[in-house]
Amino acid sequence: MAYPLGPPSRGNSLIQIKAPVTSKGPNELMFRNPLTRDVTVVLVIKTLIVIAAALFVFGPSQRPHVDAAAIQALFASSPANGEGTP
Image (tube, rainbow, N blue to C red; front, side, top):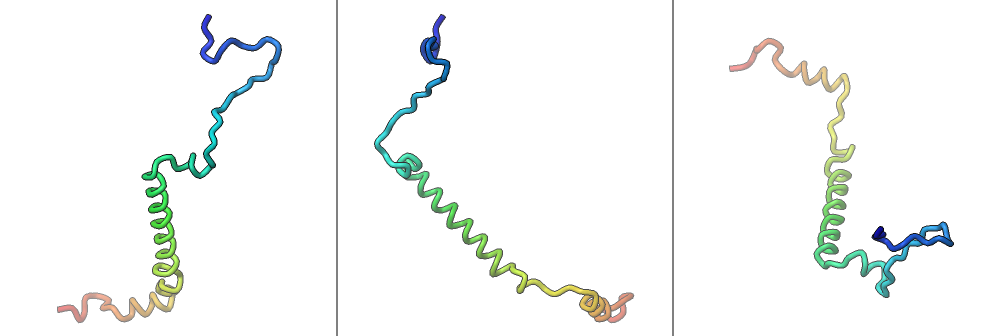
């Protein structure tokens, strides 16, 4: 019988996993391809732009104040049954 990971050890019941050892730092392993790093940087910048737009362009201070008085004024200023329309 062939074992893909080698024959099982009889003396030790713990499974030992051997990982490849490299001399590169964690940053070099994370971005092996320069395109990966560039795409990550662009996505982070775009995410920050969207968050900034949500805060400054569409923030609570930019929204209209809607309450009962504002709705009443809106309906009072519009013609109720088509009067005043050409």
